[in-house]
Image 1 (cartoon, rainbow, N blue to C red):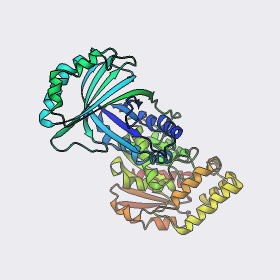
Image 2 (image 1 turned 90 degrees about the horizontal axis):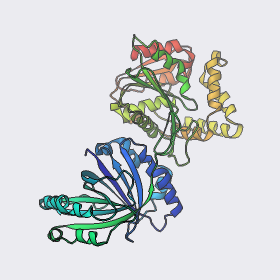
Image 3 (image 1 turned 30 degrees about the horizontal axis):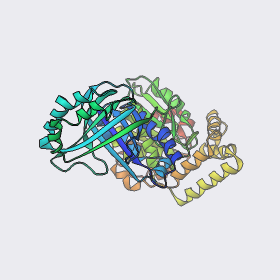
Image 4 (image 1 turned 60 degrees about the vertical axis):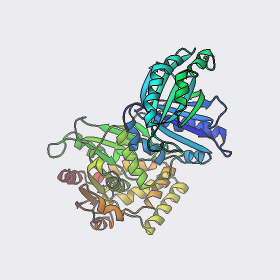
Length: 488
């Protein structure tokens, strides 16, 4: 599929569909999400004006249909929010079709107050007759109807509930735009649908359907805070993209309870002095759940976290990055990104993490969640940062900065992220990783240095950072950047 096109969705609410919830979901989430995508030019909802079912439709103009086969579009269905899943489960029917534009007459930059949609199936042998009739007679006569604005013609590329036509047949859609006050069913309209040519053509049709729709609402794209993207299911990813636009991009993924600022010093070094005479562009972001995660967001799992990074890169129009570097939860994300999206990175670095959860860790995460809920995030921050940093650095400036990050984290988001850390196992997928990898651990981070050397990921090497614990970039910046320089 390529070139301009048209997305058409017809919905019939069911007996269990709550009307208010249906409209709120459609008007504030489902439609506006699509308007965020640069190839979706506009979108509107229509209500049936002919008394037929389905009673509701939504239509979108698309600049290039090739985008509809890419993940930035298909993820809208694959990663539906909890609210969307709940509302859609009540529908009697949902019929989604994709059409390619191949003819347009007239001009109508605004959503049409009234649309007449005519679907026709013909045998391929009769398609030229249909086209000739439309182009040489029918559209000219329709244009004489008072209030006529535009006629567009499309061919179906992706079928709906009934699928694509059988081999040897084609389905076409003609969409006629009219003003609210128009001459439909008047003398000009009657003349347009009662010519001898049309009478002959109608005998050749396999099927035809005419629907009349009245404009209900035009979607606006959802607003996003500055330097943020909001995922399909409503989680906010606040990001910073810095450095020379021509430089290769390196992505940093932070640990649970921390922000993108744990990478400040490393990012500055890569952008300014660089490594081995090469500077880099740096993308950092706060993973979902740190400060904002909508109630409709899906449970946090590592597949979702890897796909969040994919979405962020797509929204920033970055096709491939030089490396993804993550620590702790971010380290697992970097490994899983290499598994799920191998064409979007050249290398990965995973620091102080494991490739599977364990029952012992699950119990520990539950205790930490209860501590945060019962005594507050400050209490959780105190014990967490002391566990992350080596004893000699408990009072360091970076430790104090990390305490502030943890204290300001959102307990609900922490619980969601802990859920991911309690329920993952990447071991069976590690052998599929193609990108070269570097595994790093602070030598003071318990058993992790030993465990990480046994991951068995192809084409990886391990480096231990002396005088450092769970966040080695904050305790031994020089050794950490030296390890990166030898790999990047």
